[in-house]
Amino acid sequence: SGGWKKAIMVDSRRLESQVETGSSKCTALFDHARSPHHRGQLATASHVQAVRHPTCGDQVCLQVRIDESGRVGEGWFDGRGCLVSQAAASILCETIEGRRVADLRDFSAEAFVATIGTPLTPARRGCALLAWQALHAILVSIPDESVPSASAA
Image 1 (cartoon, rainbow, N blue to C red):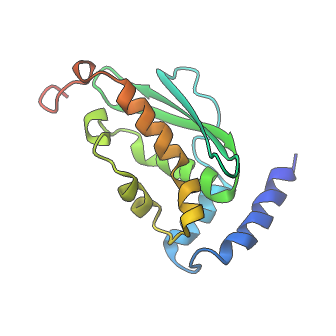
Image 2 (spheres, rainbow, N blue to C red; image 1 turned 30 degrees about the horizontal axis):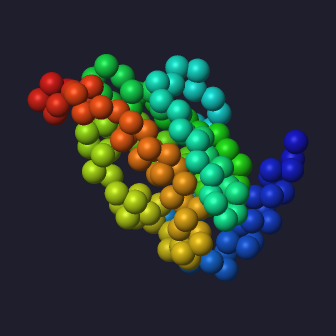
């Protein structure tokens, strides 16, 4: 039961050599790793997308509920992997809740990395983008005509 806590501690020591520590954004990344927001199953999900990193095997399953106004009502995730992939999924869920699908379609990978705010090596950037990749797959699966326009929302 305490194995995941030990894994986070070990991974956080490894991560310290790959990100700049001491910034408030880096602290936020570690906070999300230690206490992820919205981790678990979303029984009322309207869309679910699982992704796996081809090299390291990290996994993220993103579950969202899009409401009738075209907004993300809730976002949850589950998965396993390094501190960065899991903390980034937590940050993504917190970031997307309440946002319109139409607006999220313009939410680029670069914008998400900026939201995380921690300088990452290229390998860690790939881990951080797993949840965003799942979100992107969900968004492209939603037909344009099913998303209310800004004037209707």
